[in-house]
Amino acid sequence: MPIITVNNRQVHIQELNKGAGQTVVLIHGMFSNLSIYYFNIAPVLAKHFHVVMYDLKSHGMSERFLDGYDLDNMSSDLIGLIDHLQLEKVHLVGYSFGGLIALKTALEYPDRVNQLVVIEAPDPQDEKARNIIDEYSKEFLEHYVANFTDTTKVQMGKRQMEKNHRMYEFLFNQTSIKADMIKEKQFLGETDFNKLMGPTLLLYGADSNCRPTGEWLQSKISQSELELIPGDHNIPIQEPNLIAETIAQFLSKILTQNHG
Image 1 (tube, one colour):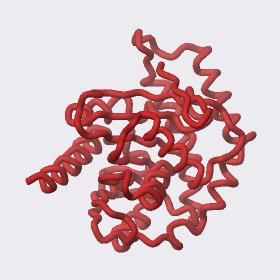
Image 2: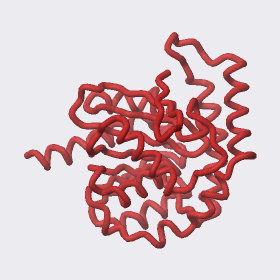
Image 3: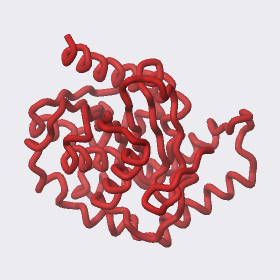
Image 4: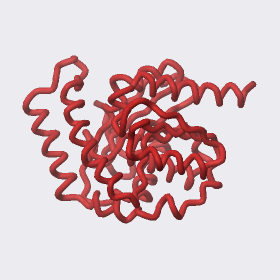
């Protein structure tokens, strides 16, 4: 598993189709890891794009840290990764809290981001939405256990299971992650979305409690379109192929328009 050093921190990344002309960076949610994309979504996108996935700090196989989970720090980490890989501009795809990281990065570094895809980003002000992230993490772990394979296609063993449980316990109980999320309560309400330079695709579950946030974002972001996917907050698990194809069509359509 490739581990690179970014800003003096060890980061686990995976790349597909390095030779492609356009790069898509996939950002997972809190209490998750890059495998949410690795098995189903990334391979579809890799038919058209160079795909970069990475584990957020203290997630998956990346280095553990006690603090720095606010959007400023997470966005800075992402730009550090993009710099390390010597990528000039990328498309960003972020799920759940990763969607907020993608949004923050596109706002702060508009010259580094082409198109933006936000999947099920919650409103940090909504306590119910924050609770969804906790509930999602449990379902994610079950999904991860059921689908995890390493390079030899061996299913996760008991030792790996225990390691993942320890990681989640660390995140929940020892880091500032929840406090940092609460600090971002006013993020959406205080944001000037006119700073977004490129088109934005909003993907939300038709039955998700976060759907009103997606509809609100569509009303605020001028170059945006909202697609409702069958399911709830867990649509990357429930409809990975549909999500992958929808993202690929959106990015390809924009590229065709720009070069037509």
